[in-house]
Amino acid sequence: MTISQEKKAEPLNLESVTWGDLTWVNIEQPTRRETEYLAKNYSFHLYDLDDCLSRKQRPKIDEYQDYLFMVLHFPRYHKEEGKSTPSQVSVFVGEKYVITLHQGELKPLVKLFRQCQIDADVRQEHLSQGSGYLLYRIIDRLIDYLFPILDKILESVDNIEDSVFDEKIEVAEDLAVLRRDIITQRRIIWPMRAVIGSLEPKLKRFSKVDLNVYFGDTVDHVDKVWDTLDECKEVIEVFKDSDYTLSAERLNHIMRVLTIISTMMLPLIVISSLWSMNVPLPFGANPGGSPYVFVAMVIVLLSVVGGMLYFFHRKRWI
Image 1 (cartoon, helix red, strand yellow):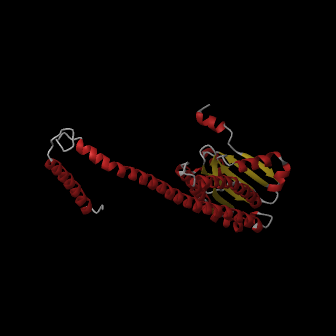
Image 2 (tube, rainbow, N blue to C red; image 1 turned 90 degrees about the horizontal axis):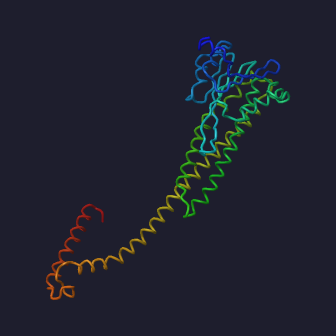
């Protein structure tokens, strides 16, 4: 058997559940083989199939005569690194099918499909009202997943608030990490708001129930997430400015103390330097020194100081 024949013999990374005349096809970690299968069995546009494999596709919704195609991004939180990254979900919605393509990273989507596979009551609840209603339930699950991530961000904001005003704790790095995560969340949520907000009128033909109230609630949830992220962004900016101001104030205090110490030591350094020179001076180690030598040394030193002051003044440093 050749390599190409072996690849053809391998099963497709594709699962499905059916209730009545509606089928939910779920494809995790799609490859070119799965998109070729969809091209043969459905009348999907080739550009849409290519978008399913793209990692740079922006959230969007394309409407065709027989189906809808959409790309959505949802945040995936990495607990070890303390940050979020976007995870793409591509969806085809037709009269008798819903096809989801994703990387299997979003736990609510994976869990919902498994529940529909093993529990007939869940399968009936989600698939009996049409493909539009099924898509609503999928999106609703994924949006609910945003709130635990949002709770982690709010918890981090509260922790940093206590640390900012504690001069013993350095929070600049924590502020930068949290600010990056908030920016990432906002970059994911912003384009998704427009897609979800325009979705309900396009799904009416694929649903047996009125989706207006359902999607109204979903849009409210997305707006709540966005408003909370916007508030967190402003709070973090305030914390960043406060940390910078407090750090500058602490540095000024330290410099003030060091300046006082330096000023106190300066006369002692000048006196000890003069009488430690290898020149006969009055009251020095070599008795009989001439006072004229001492006066000449002082004049030279003052001339150097005066020249430096004049140079600094010309440079507008003082």
